Image (cartoon, rainbow, N blue to C red; front, side):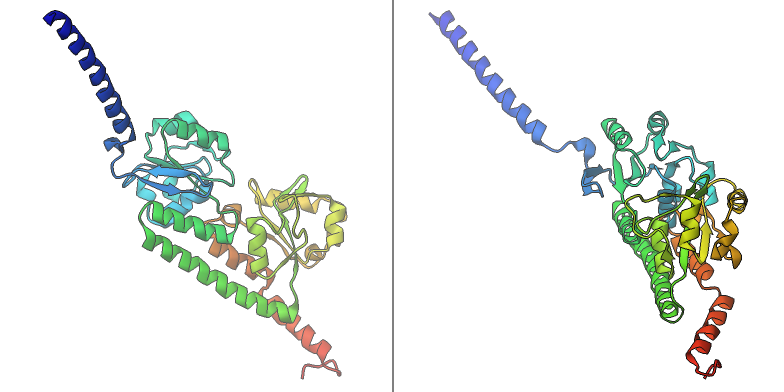
Amino acid sequence: MIDSMKIRFWRSGCRGLRVVLCVLAVLLAAAPSTEGAGAAGLQDASGALVTVPANAQRIVSLAPNLTEILCGMGLGPRLVGVSSYSNYPPAVNKLPKVGGFAALSIETIVSLNPDIAVGTMDGNSEADVARLRSLSIPVFCVFPNNMQGLMRAISQLGKLFKCENEAKELVGNIELVVKQVKSKADRLARTLGRPKVLIALDTKPIVSASADTFIGELVAIAGGANVVGANSIRYPRLGLETVVASAPDVILVTGHGSQQGLLDDLRQLERWQEVPAVKNGRVYLLDPDVTTRPGPRSAGALLAIHEKLFPESEVESRKSKVESQRSPTGNPQ
């Protein structure tokens, strides 16, 4: 009798123990992990909630402009890897390269044991980002596809890495240049009109950039009228007849590879000499790394483009012509 009672008590005790263990398992699963203590969740530009390690020290940059932004905020010493075409500031050339931003080397990134990677929605593939996240590497994506997006990206990264003051200063410097250039460009445009601008990123075929691209926005702020305008294709290919018909006053040649080679290719095209920008010697070469990367150097790119659109000699000449046309006698009053 006693033995049977012991057996029943033991069995009921086991069932109770199993219940207790199940409850404990649920509670432990719901409790925050001590391994991630200090980590915080921050929403990136894609809408993903990224768990950011506290005081992340090992950063991988997945695009050249992001490398420049991070260095511009003083985070260069924390970089352990950068994308293949990251070449500014010069010190980043010594860092391991993790592949082109459109085709990352996942193995290389993993080998660098980063705390976090910073990516862009304007170039990095969703598949690469998802793969890194599946390997427990947090990826924080920004979207600096235009000037407003650039400012937002800098602010987001400042918050992410707890360097809000540096980010605020960087944004303030860029915004100041934008405000000054736009004000001057608008004033000149009211008097002289906006020069028609062709952006040539490549020549075989001629590849341009619409108003919806970053460089297209720079041209607009600088006072130019993009001959492509708003286009459903951000980087349309243009035939020579289209270029001639658009009659650009200024041609900005930018693109990777040999800059002089691009210009030489254009000069060999038939009817090229009919283009006003060519006849008037207003075809300019621009550094693609500066003009096509949304980053700290965009302020300098904006100034350079504005100077090409409204050079001092050209401004004075056109002002004289405008005043002459206003005067009944043909002389300035």
